[in-house]
Amino acid sequence: MQGWWTEQTGVWFAFLGMSGLLVPLLVWQVNRGRHRQAVLRTWIGVVVTYSIITVAGAIARLVGQPNYVWIPLVYAGFGTAVPYAATYHVMKKRYTDIELRKARARDL
Image (tube, rainbow, N blue to C red; front, top):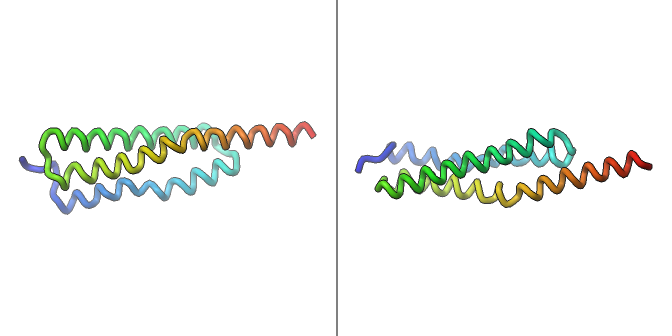
């Protein structure tokens, strides 16, 4: 079966997993207690986007695409979606802790 793209193009899909530049920016905003809705929605958006990429990789595998098509999709999608999904509640709890700390400081 002919691949959806060439082997050289498949290498670029491995860079999909490089949303690592987004993490420090979002964590910085969390630690400042700013932009709660924007950060949490972005976090969910990343999980959903990379989950879709993982599903696309699984579909590619099922329809018989070559390894250079489905492997970058599955690895980039799964390797990014799982850590983001696992740390979502940590980020949400951090926002709650910061809000409680601010409320206690106002009460003093």
